[in-house]
Amino acid sequence: MAEERRTRATEAFFGRRHGKTLRSAQADAMARLLPALKLDLDAPAPIDLKTLFAVPVDGVRLEIGFGGGEHLHHETGRFPGTGFIGVEPFVNGMAKLVAQLDAEPRPNLRLHDDDATRLLDWLPEASLDGIDLFYPDPWPKKRHWKRRFVSAVNLDRFARVLKPGARFRFASDIDTYVNWTLLACRAHRAFAWQAHSPLDWHTPYEAWPGTRYEAKAMREGRRPAYLTFLRD
Image 1 (cartoon, rainbow, N blue to C red):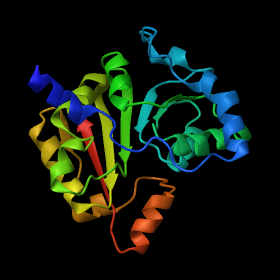
Image 2: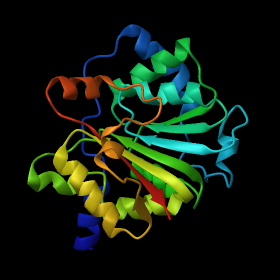
Image 3: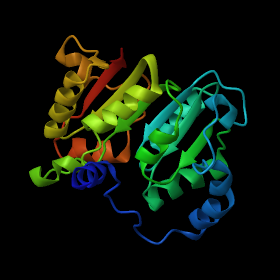
Image 4: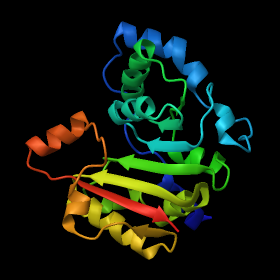
């Protein structure tokens, strides 16, 4: 039982859930739009995730911890025929995206505002065409590394829900977390790193819009790495 508690503790969401008070427009958008966009994890997951969306889609991708939603909103507009699920427990980040959706709706998007592990356990096996994890909390102190979202347990979750050949993409400006992720995926038989030279992991993804966090990291002299793994 003690071991089970320790395992669960490394999988939970450890970050802040609230920041500054929401602006009135953000709070209004959250109240009006989020209930319809939010997934109901108390109901059984559909056998076919495509039925979750208001428009026909040919596949479903997941972004975990989307921050202010810059990349997620960009991708949903770029691929209107793909369904997207976005996860962000931080209320202020969720509010930024939802307020943007008020002006630029995305019928191919659903949201989850709680711990991503709950969603991963809810999803059907081999149901996702991709998982993106960009700039997750690095937990830089060594005693906190066990809180990092990339772990053997969560890679098992990724492997269960990803289709064969689907991509897991990871970006970070923290060297120790990049190395941590490379070692974790190398140790997991389900994932193969797609890189042949340093240019492969220093080049942003196709049509990458960047994020405010990334711009700050680069101003401070930290060079991002963009890793891509294939589900075998």
